[in-house]
Length: 228
Image 1 (cartoon, one colour):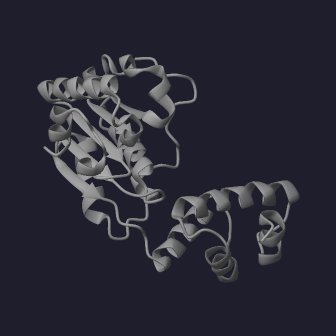
Image 2 (cartoon, rainbow, N blue to C red):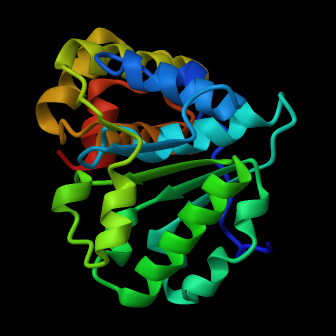
Image 3 (cartoon, rainbow, N blue to C red):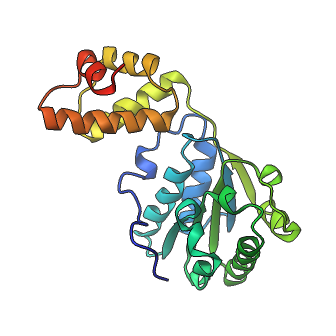
């Protein structure tokens, strides 16, 4: 069960720092599943920036304190290794598969996922999958696999509204030891992408730049770094 180098959990991808907004129900279901007393199978989907990858990695982090073995499998990074990489993962208590859309329509991958699903179910282990579309619109060709994807609970992650994005940005900044003024946050929201993932990437870039330049993050500094 060796994964290629570079496949690891982000340390900051945890339930504690996920700003839930309207996603309280799905977060609660995932927390229970990660602990081993919730649903055996869940499918979550959402557009870029809604937090699917964060939540799958949060599940893996949450499994560790309760001594449950877990793995995070981002298919966007693993697809080229072929479906045999899925062998033996059914022995783990929790398997979290991300970017399911990457293998939709690939007969070998679909069959491998179908068999993994069945083995996980037979072993009483938990399988959580995520994609950018609901199962019916994913383009899965193997009818048996598509039916399996609809067997459990299916959740759509809801995007954050602007007020909640501000809360999320402030929380991420505090976690990094940064102080962002309201003027900086307003500037980021109005001049950059409003996609939450893009906003967080921008914040990370500003953090690195501020450390390098030994300067506070101000509106003029943001203009300079981001060329806005």
